[in-house]
Amino acid sequence: MQFDGLDISILGPAFLAGVLVLSTHVPMGIRVLRRGIVFIDLAIAQVAGVGIIAADSLGLPLHGISVQLIATGTAVAGALLLAWSEKRWPQLQEALIGTLFVLAASIGILLLSHNPHGGEYLKELLVGQILWVQPAQLIPVAVLYLLVLSIWFRLGDGMSGMAFYLLFAITVTASVQLVGVYLVFASLIIPALAVIGTTRRPLLASYALGGAGYAGGLLCSALFDLPTGAVIVCTIAALAALYGAVAGKVGSQRREGE
Image 1 (cartoon, rainbow, N blue to C red):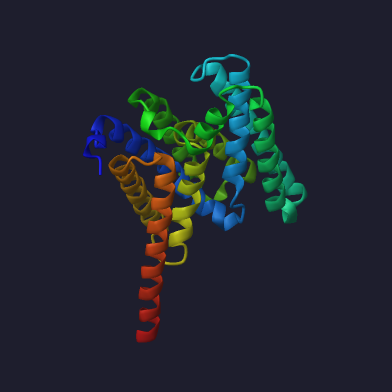
Image 2: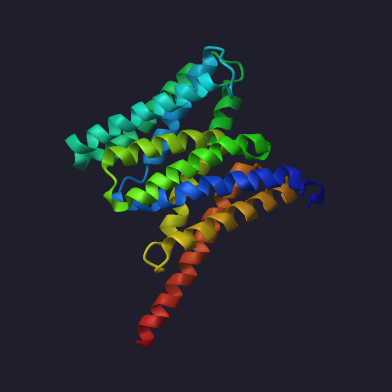
């Protein structure tokens, strides 16, 4: 173990970044599972990634406003395409989402093919660099998420498909730049998947599960010097599996006692 890695100045902002991502992705994940479009976040995140890679290929500053506009624009374009396809071919939506993901991933690889640091850049986009998040980066994301959540909970189940896709695209664009594609998917799907049908308060349970996953993953990464994003994904998955096993056992005992 390496206790020197337990630096609150590094782990603190990283954990706050995870909490921010969970704040929007948990309710969105529950809605995504209900709609049966599980891989939408991977597709939209990958499309946003293509925008980031394209902006970098043009020599634009990585965290500049121009990169944000390009990444958001590509993600919104992908969301509008999926909103249109859902109306036209609803029975094929999941297949079309998968196709968009593969296409965007392939375009990203092509754009990086002549970049000497392309492999490292692609790894950073997928796994993220959550340990290097700076507190100043969290402020605009927090403001954006607050706006997204206010719209999300105000509209509720009355939200149109178009509004859902647009809010999703804007949120995922910000999230993927904080934590990477894999953690975006893990935050969105795994907590919601674990608690579905096991509790009357799925939102609260998903938040608790996701928060514990980020905290435990960050600690394990610091203590054992392991890649942070990958460890957090595995920790969230392990806690979800444990929760599912315990909740399933408790549920069966209740049914036997009735």
